[in-house]
Structures are given as structure tokens and as C-alpha cells.
Image 1 (cartoon, rainbow, N blue to C red):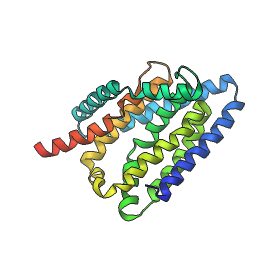
Image 2: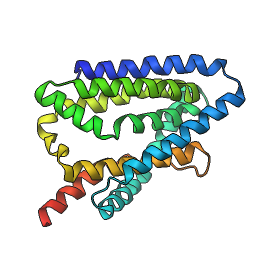
Image 3: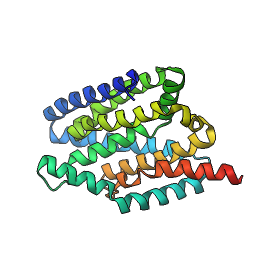
Image 4: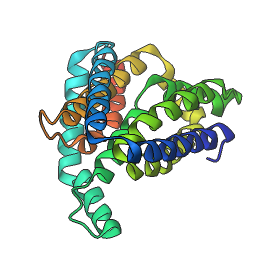
Length: 228
């Protein structure tokens, strides 16, 4: 659970988020808006690139539909908003929630997370997660300047998720197969794309409610292998 590379990843996010928070406070509103738009556009391109890796778009659609409905019923994002509201003594509709959800999704949905955690858990090879830590640290500086403490808090969820993946890597090694990895990446890409759309205020998509889709796509791919 507390693999050294996972801890390093979390620390990198916290350090980057704090630096971004300090930088963001010194930027003018005009500069913040430009930075915000730049992050949104880059996120959209990243999401499209990941989404196009899909091996089967029907599986991706099914996973997003099942996971989205499940997340809506559970009201994942609403629960996060209410928790944030109690912490910040607000109505919960704050940058904290958006920053926490957006950062958590961005930092855990990519193939580097899956492959890195599996390698760390099975062969004690932490190199992929160390590289990911560097990339996440840089990204968290930018996101921290926009979203502040929400990005810093996402380090906790990233450490828990990656820690569990490392701990159960022996049982999850099948996820490194192309049949699973491509559709998993694509579902994550659609969620990243949704974050970009949300950042640009085109549509308020509750990305957090789609988190169960990451589990749904694995289940659907497994079922597909049984009937193939």
C-alpha cells in the first residue's frame, strides 16, 4: 500500500499544488483566465488522444453508460460537494470540488498508472511511477494555480488508488494486456475530455459521477473475452 514510488507521486502532487497555489495568488485575473483556457484546451486534446485508443467503442459506450448511471445514483460528486461544503462552510459548489475531482481523474486514468503500479507491485520496478510523478508534479503546478487546495487534496486519493493497485498487482496483471488497457485508457480519455469541456464552461459535466466507468470497462472487457 505504502510503496515508496506511490508516496513520491503524492508528495510531487502536493509540492506542485502548493507552488501553483502560491503562483496563482500573484497572477492578475487576466493572466489567470489565459492560463485557465490553456489548461482546458490542452486537457481536451489529451482526452481526444486517449479516447481514440479505444479497441472497441461499444465497450467504451457501455462502460460510460453503466458507470455514469451508477455514479449518478450514488451521487459521487454531490457527496464530495457536500463534504467540501462542511469543510469550507460553503454550499459546496467551489473550486475545491472541481479541482479535487479533475486532478484525481487526470492523475489516475492514464496507462502509466496501471502499468506503473503493476510493475511496482510485481517486480518492484518503480521507474514508470517515478516518471509519472515528475509529470504529475508539473501538471499540479498549473492546476494548483487555477484550483488551489483541491489539487493538493487529490494527492490523498491518488495515493490510495495507486497504493491499492500496487498491493493487488499480482491479481491485476491482466490489465496490462492490450485488450484491457486500450479500452480503459479510452474511457479515461472521455472523462478527461469532459473535464476540458467543464473547464471552458461549455457544459457543467459531473465528471466525478463517471468514476465507476473505470471499473465497468474492465468488467465488460472480461465478459467480452469469455464470449469471444
